[in-house]
Every structure is written in C-alpha cells, then in structure tokens.
Amino acid sequence: QVQLVESGGGLVQAGGSLRLSCAASGRYAMAWFRQAPGKEREFVATISWSGSSTYYADSLKGRFTISRDNAKNTLYLEMNRLKPEDTAVYYCAAKTARGLASREGQYDYWGQGTQVTVSS
Image (cartoon, rainbow, N blue to C red):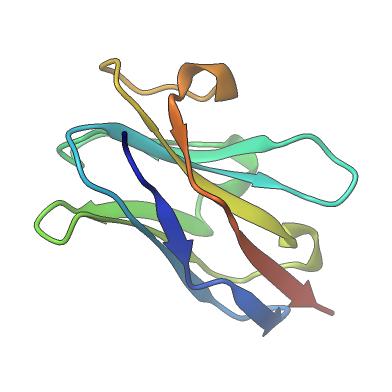
C-alpha cells in the first residue's frame, strides 16, 4: 500500500508563492490535482518517476512547477504568482502504470489533500 502525505498548504496573499510537498515511496509516476469549492477535481501537473518528463494543465503553465527528489521520496509543487482562483484542496496522486497521465481514473493512490487559500 502506498501512502501519500501532503504538506505545505496554507493562507497566502495574491501574488505570493507556496511550495507543496508530498511524501511518497516507490517507483511511480506522480501528479498533483486540485479541487476548488463546488467544483470537480482537476489536473494540475504530472511527472515521471525519473523526473525527466513533466506535463502541465495549459492554464497553469509558467506559474506552477512540479518536481521530485527521489532520494528524499518527495514530490513538490512550486506555485508562483498565486491567484484567488487557485484556492483549492491540492492532492498528490501516484500511478503504478508507466507513462504520464492527466485523468483521475488513471491514478491508483491518493493523499488526503492540503488546503491552499489565496486571499485577494
């Protein structure tokens, strides 16, 4: 059983930055998703096990960066120039199948989520 534990969420002013972390072990492609109040969960970014390949939601390119440190078994999401519409619960996810993916159903393991609130 893979355990994923997110951290790093909090309250930040618009224009600020946050870095989320997800503690995970194992050889998996991983991703970040988010769910805003009253909305469906949406894809944010994904990264291969090696870290050599990444893929982002078009709307977030240039502001968010996904990375991982396999020596520390940790996945990261660097979020810059945050906007109030980035307010959501952010989840990390892992998939056992190879390759990158952007659909929820392709991921096998999920963390509990960490709240990010961006004030205007």
